[in-house]
Amino acid sequence: PPPPPSPLSREMRRTVRGGLHRLRAQPAWGLVQRLLGLRGGCAAARGMSTLSDISSIELPLPALSPTMETGVINSWKKKVGDFVEAGDVIADIQTDKAVVDFECQDEGYLAAILVDEGGEHPVGTLVAIMVENEEDIAKAQEIAKGLSTGPAGATPIEPVAEAAAAAGTTSSAPEPQASAAGSYEVKTLLPSAAVLIHRNHIDPSSIAPTGPKGHILKGDVLAAIASGSFRTLESTESSPAMAATAAPAPTTESKEGKTTASSDGSPDPSKRGRTYTDIPLSNMRKVIAKRLTQSKQDVPHAYSSVRCSLDAILALRKSMKEQDQKPPSLNDFVIKASALALRDVPEANCTWDEKAQLAVYHDAVDISVAVATPDGLITPIIKNAHHLRLAEISGTMKDLAVRAKEKKLLPEEFQGGTFTISNLGMFGINHFSAVINPPQTCIMAVGGGVDVMIDKDPSNFEASSPEDMVKSTTMTVTVSSDERCVDQATTSLMLTAFRGYMENPLSML
Image 1: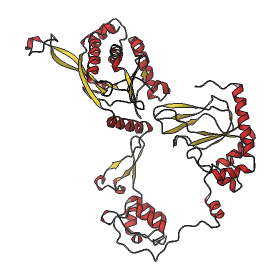
Image 2 (image 1 turned 180 degrees about the vertical axis):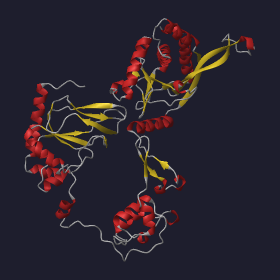
Image 3 (image 1 turned 120 degrees about the horizontal axis):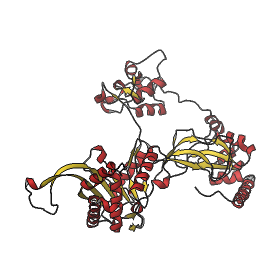
Image 4 (image 1 turned 30 degrees about the horizontal axis):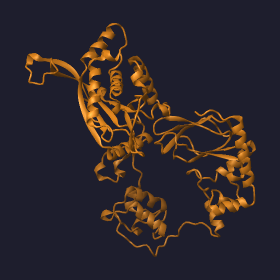
């Protein structure tokens, strides 16, 4: 977090805000707002107070990660009326990757909270209002009632009655034009159209269908309501087609506690007799889908695989257990071997600068490790992995994995990295290829150990007799590389070094 501002900088801010406040108090300020189209101009024209009339601070939803487009406020740490100092945490925000503290950079009184906990809003949405003077809290709350919670700087929402009065008209619902409505054969209504027809007491035979096979679509009903070309039904009347489709579909409760709609209300005939559950995508999965799709489209992927023997690592782990020592996991050995291989082949330890169209080579080896969470994959980073011992890598990885699943990682703990490892061996996957996570240029896909028969002499490439064969546990890894800066020759050198460390684990201790 940034250091708290000095008293001098606070005094300077008060001076600047005081000057702006005096400027806004001038009679010509409302005219300037209306001419420039600034927020609050319409309200000033009606004689209403705006945030410009008080010394206020607007708090928009910040972008707390480079890929964050929307956010969810999990909880407010301050309540209306509390005094907030610079550096105080006022809310917890769920980004596309983790839960991050929302720290206020100004001081004042929290006058109004415009969004509730749990709702998803785009970056820039006005979420709260602060005032410098405690006596302005009540006035700010009154102004906040007429503000939209759209992006900061949006105009206040004008009440319909006031807008109509200002225009010299009265608001009223469109009168149905019975003469303009025709008579059509009523066929099956889709559920969305049936709900609209039921709520507005519309005669379905007065709606012109445009759907396939004469079905009435939701858009048909909305168009009829907008033009007023429909007939209404008496409250005691009902249409057989509408009654058949507008009836609420029976629901069932799934094990996860989500409501599933019966197939009788489903627009898809193929789902008749079945139940289903709609689960919206989390912010994290939306970002993952967007970035990986972009990666496959823009990044020229090349794939290289190598098979490593795990016999030496398994024997070392067994020996450590017999000595009552807690051995590092196989994943820890993979992380350490990858870091040392990247140290030996620094040409593979790079990222791609899209704007400058060049490769950026790094001295530090920061390994990103994919961790599965209920919301999607996240890649916490083990920094300077080539300098860490296996025990340090093991402890760091366990801590990062636990906090990743609890959504408590700091942004700097999952943003960046120079190389990614995705290990699916514990899930029984023997071999797979992973998608590069830009701006990184390489990702290693690690499969599980498999028992195979190999020749006693690894350098023998001729056909071996059965007596020369021995059982060995091997593992296949595949590196996806960006051909723009890491060609397959470089990847081969890196994989050769990686296999050397994996098959001689004592060199990593």
